[in-house]
Image (cartoon, rainbow, N blue to C red; front, side, top):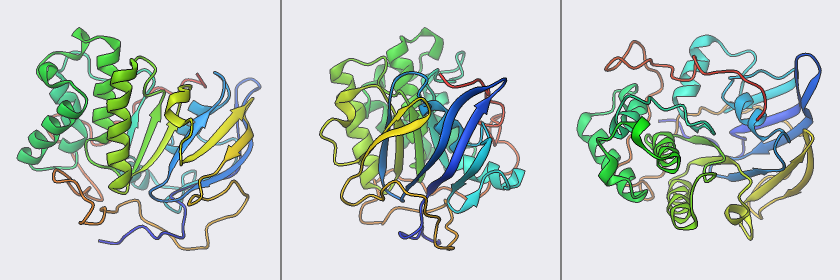
Length: 289
């Protein structure tokens, strides 16, 4: 399996602007990059542009100007098949969760593994591990619409992490959690990072990034207000990748791979257990929250 090349960004924004009709400017001339395995925190007031960045990365929205690349692919030029393949290898935890309310916790977490034809035993083991990590084991067979918002938020995070995808996007992942539960989520993020996953986290929660060794990008009115790079992370710049095209598909090093890791297949066609192979394709395209 081809590995992501360390010299090429997994996410790259080059002079990106986003304008919502009629003239709401969400992002203004943003340029930054994120390398494979990095963690990036997006901070700033509500409406600063954090959610718009996440929507551009998973191609729910498209830039008004500039270029957004994921794993070397210009998303505005990618085919439908390429976008589907890229999306299947992302985990996304939305601010409004986007869970299946009439289905159980276990079914919601299983969904991204089912569409990549992960073996049933691996799915069961992975669900058990995530439920235990996030203190949700007693809720395994409970319908999602019977859960509290904090519990639903943890289910959304578990679903995003289920496949150990190379890239995970999280929008306010601790907004409904108390400090004790937040610690469980942070511990899971650290496990994912050590397994080689790239994390991009939009948050107001100072406890997540205060004194963090990871880069923090603070936004204000759609522009970069400040950037605090980690020693091993790329700095904000207008540079472009060096021409090497990287594939999003990548397994972590076997020595760091968790026992329940299931490699992500490059493509999935058709359906598995009634689940759409492209769960992002039907998502809402509302403006910046």
